[in-house]
Image 1 (cartoon, helix red, strand yellow):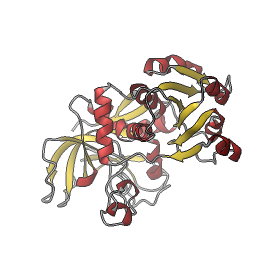
Image 2 (cartoon, rainbow, N blue to C red):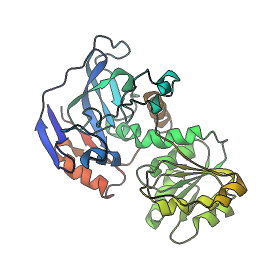
Image 3 (tube, helix red, strand yellow):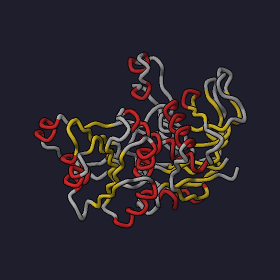
Length: 335
């Protein structure tokens, strides 16, 4: 089979021929149709996580089950399925014993712990597999297994009543989905971006308000709108994230899903005086991915994507990592 792999930390993508994997008793073999490219794939490309090389990245995988292991009963040949960031858990650690699989002490990550979706085939543990609605195209469903679930799951677990003022900071790969989800969940939706050309896009996606943080103070504008019950921070810009804290309403929450590399600055009195909180959210489990896909299908929530053939994995990765794509990049297979 054909695959795009990294042979060493910092190395280039290599298009290679590898032996088609065989699933063990608890795995499924997937004939891959599409795989999204994510910023987190840099963990493999640059060696930012412990990785055993060579490694095939990819954790936004959609494909058809080719075969299953002897102890796999839920899944069968011919089903269209996906594999996301959460690539398996141990079932035995303290977190797993409490059903908190996302915090498994021995959690696996597709494309990091084992070879992922930059290939024509891959195997995955049965507990990592996600059912995919027929109504979703494979290339559009793929990014929903990371960017989609991250924003959808964070918003729904905020447990806000319909009509709440929800701001999406950053209108990029995560944020353009966050605006759609917030709108469809019944929130008064605010899009925050430093790019004026995204104002019409944000409106088309469902935003009721647009704030250009380079032209106005986002916190002041949010307060003029009544104060944000929730700000979902999707863009990894610590300074921009810090600038919205004062825009939270009483009991408001800054919920961070964009992994910025620098500290967020928050004045203690801004939290104390309004009983405000700063929190984070770590995507979700395969069942959460299924909920994301079903909701996306019901409300026609789609990522904006650019597609590339597997042979151009390096070029596609560069467009993603350099923020040149609008907004997600997906590899498609010809197998």
